[in-house]
Length: 258
Image 1 (cartoon, rainbow, N blue to C red):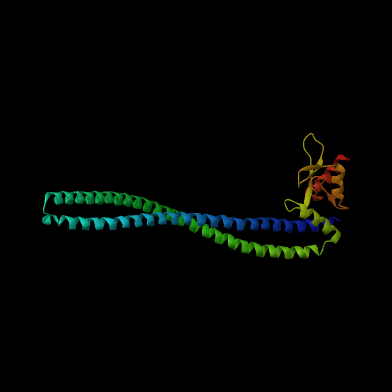
Image 2: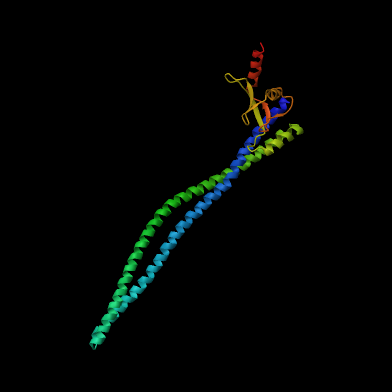
């Protein structure tokens, strides 16, 4: 049975690698999705700034056109002064000229204010575009790296599954099925745990399950060392195999019996 347990330990090494790599593989698509969402968010922010500037430019052009017409009208009306025949017409003309000047002045103030807003938003756009462009480039590079890593992981995992298949062919089915049942319910991809010998000051020696750090009952630990059948940890349900220190335990027991 000890030879069978060693085969399970080798299988466990492969399954642990598969578990860890598949966990990493599962995180990468979500990672890429989050990066893509950040790219869209930053691109939308840049688009919003450009749209705001475009609206302001359009408003400025409308006022420029009105102001241009107002100035042309002012020139036309001013040129009519020589044709005035009486005081009433003259006063009416002055009132019209004054109204046009006020309108043109108000339009000039609005245009100046819009120019300030355009300048401010353009500066913000340039700074944001420069910052976001670097960040977006970084996100795209990371997405490319993640995609490449996913391809590598797929190939490595496929290879490990091939190795696993070869290993299972040399394990008795009854043993493999028990191992597989435990593995399928394991939260960490482990179905094997070593039982190690522990001797601390002023305390009796004991066996320890390295899967969950539970102290094993002495009779169970001794059964694990004998390796005559499959033993499982009462706590984590892992199949127990003799740890690296079980020889020390035998030595200590021998010395204590003298």
